[in-house]
Amino acid sequence: MKKITVLGSGFAALTAVKKLRKLDKDCEVTLVSAKDEFIYLPSLIWIPSGRRKSSDLIVPLKNFISKYSVNFHAGHVTGLKQEGRVVSTILNGVDSEVENDGLIIATGGRFIKKLPGIEHAITPCEGIPAAEKIRDNINTMKSGTIAIGFASNPKEKSAMRGGPMFEFLFGLDQQLREEKRRDKFKLVFFCPAPKPGIRMGEKAVVGILSRMKKLGIQTHLGQKMKGFEANKVKTEGGDFDADLILFMPGMTGNKWFKTSQLPLSEGGLLKANKHCQVDGLSNVYVAGDSGSFPGPGWMPKQAHMADLQAETAAENLINSLNDKPAEAIFKAELMCIVDSNNKGVFTLRTESRQFVLPPMRIFHWAKRFFEWWYLRGLR
Image (cartoon, rainbow, N blue to C red; front, side, top):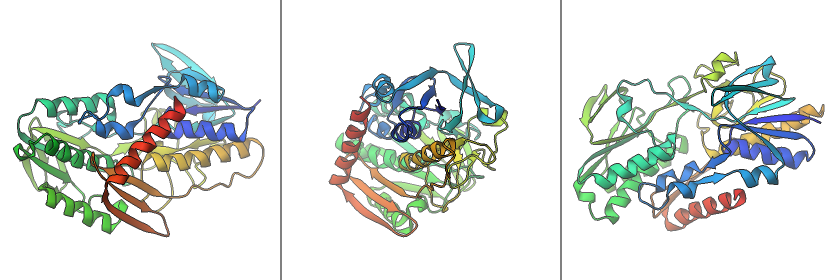
């Protein structure tokens, strides 16, 4: 019986498990993660306004594990041995190993925390505690300046999380308006890129900046970041005061990538080909934020893209283990709804087309419906 190990418990990992089981009902699949739970990160944006709470977004994977006949191995991955055939883990000080015939790495990325004073900024996508910290700060603030921004990995431009920061920005603006205290706050959006959101296309950038201007959101763009202080954002183009700072730095790979002597891109992610295979390693594949993939410069790091890569990785791994050509190629596609608590902007970009639809309530409800549909499948 073929033994396949999937590392992670996010979108890419769960999609890979589903695809593996669809293609091979008999193989032994082991899921490795620190906890047997899934956190629906896209809905972190609704925690500050109280539209969601932590219990809404955490789903135990007990039913998923049973439904797809998966073995669960609890542990933090610490490295690989024998060119990927052995996964080393640790949990509560106890080391263990998981052997495999095929491996899919979907352990996500790691935020680069090198800027001086970055401890003074909240990184929203780090998880529920970060979103709750934003909520608590907003609830206690009577007035002040809220600075929201993001940056990329300078050595891996695609390794960034820009979309959620637009959502936190527009969401907080809407929240403060609903609470009838928007006039007591100054919102400032900052980014070292002169055209934030350019991955979505020129039209999207124009729309985003136009909307900021309409809502009275100040911008500080095109200036390299220098760091932070307790109440200050520092850039090469000047500093500005802020009572609350939300900042999403660029991403890089997990620390254990280096200790495992895996092939890494300049930005620290796993080097992969168009089939999602890790360069030079047999039956080792990667999906989602962990990987550096060939493709157009606008190719995003998002759940949808991770799902597409996970399906490709699973298909190619099964074919490889069955001595068949592993030739599936993932489609580069950016598809997202930038939500603002009551409306959403829909964006689609592929290599052959792109379009942006203006803010509409139907897209907000579409995003909420997808959340319900996805989590219902896990529960």
